[in-house]
Length: 415
Image 1: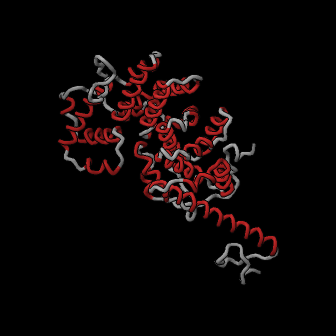
Image 2: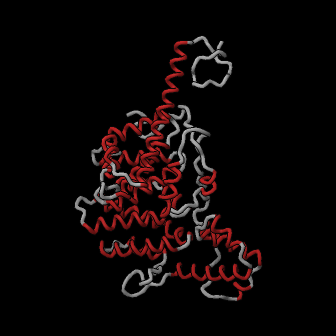
């Protein structure tokens, strides 16, 4: 199998040129996975091949994995003299760390920074108290969460529950409670859970995927696990941890199941988002994961995506599948690799499906992006062929640097 077919890319080939939005640079990883579908669609629809080479936001890996926790003060459950005697500098520093821990972007931080000092002091003290409660947990009788869906277990208690080998029914209840906690708690809580919890979540997902006879409860638990992973990724720390675990992308690729439309929709959106905002080599990792998952089932690696696109009863799944197709096909800088991926999708049945898709606003946007990028690649390929033809016909001519209307065409400046 050649390097590209296996998901690799020749670094010596010419770079693809795309436009790069300044706004996406500013956002970097301060982006919420739960709302990423709309943001991602906007970015995909703005992909064009003219301009400078695309620059993906860099992920800055922390040198100390528990730095997020140790930066915060030791939680105090009540107002005390130490809290009230904080200096102005201490309040401002803690206020900044509080906003960072709350996973706020710069747009949301700006109005909070304008609050007066007494308000900031009150917010900091209340935040410290709330953090203390989330760390100690508060088990209640009759279940893992109360009627208001508040956190009822500490992060380490969730780790203990996942490690204890609970029954599938209790696991479903635990995962739903964990999903709420991952969504509502600050980044420091997610950090504390993630040291052991992420590995345990992946262990459970792998165990369920390996089961030959999958009951209905197994499928429900798989969906809840995907939702927990999605909530876990909803911050810079969680995204780094997911991308740093070799199993995560493979298990996500293995969990793609066109028969479970809701779960597949979430997985495909996650992969699309990771493809766009991940590290420079993330495309290779996603393609490798999809290839390994497909080999286990003796299928083409893009077959499940195309099959999901055929489901006319699940329009959101169709949109998500086209988003992933566009994200994968437009990501490579190399023209040959883009054409290779696009043709692989077309051979896998996409060519037959495209004319049959029902017209909806969201789907039309993705189809327009696919066709526009296909046309632009065709034009770029045509220019390349013109260059080759010109070199073969006029091997002893060289251009003095004029701006030609057709790249590679012979002109009066050639000598």
